[in-house]
Length: 198
Picture 1: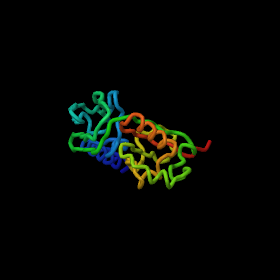
Picture 2 (picture 1 turned 45 degrees about the vertical axis):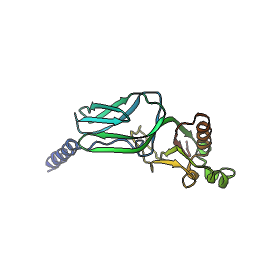
Picture 3 (picture 1 turned 180 degrees about the vertical axis):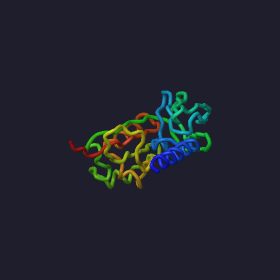
Picture 4 (picture 1 turned 90 degrees about the vertical axis):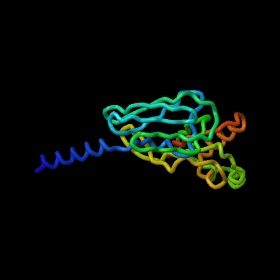
């Protein structure tokens, strides 16, 4: 009976893999910012050996998933700009809208980096003046795991305005705002901050 059950479970797993839709990790989402002036990596999962087509701005590229369904491709370098759509097509189609290209920075650390704009000095004034639609943040949810992870939970990329900026990392936001004022290009911040215990 146990052997029969294992065969059935294995068969179900193979069937699910064979019909798997194209998926991407959570860092890819509407309103994201991609790094300018370098080849742009795009990766995800699909069925084994499935052909994947990627369209971005004027680029059209394709890649074939490996036997485990993993795939990755590097788009050509792009100058700062947008908004663009990023479309990934295999057995299914995924389309991300309002994608910008600019500077992307990881904001990592403990409580000092986690401290939000809403907790900062002159918070009401800072929040009221935070109308910067070309600044975006993605917040990585806290989790504990003993092994490296290939994805994370998030509420997505947030566009900076008075209704969202309170939850931005304070250090990251003020840094991004200064960079935006100096460069006048989109700025993305990946907020990977939180309390750590050892």
